[in-house]
Image 1 (cartoon, helix red, strand yellow):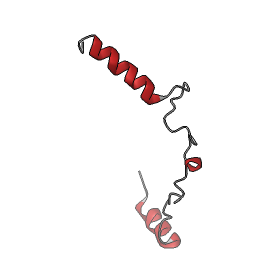
Image 2 (image 1 turned 30 degrees about the horizontal axis):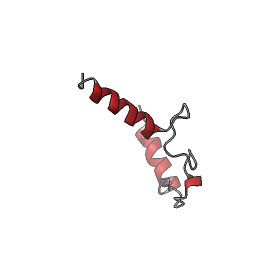
Image 3 (image 1 turned 60 degrees about the horizontal axis):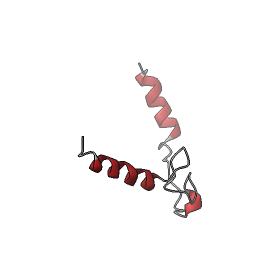
Length: 63
């Protein structure tokens, strides 16, 4: 539970809350994965693995 009196006093004292802003840098180095955007945690390319799985499912009749 919050103490409404304390919350109101806190908001009056600090004014507006701080707003989180994302950096405008969209370069590959700004991404947590760097230039390896399609890599999974195991180091394999996501789209290669996805196409393998789709091929396997289609060959088995989708079951």
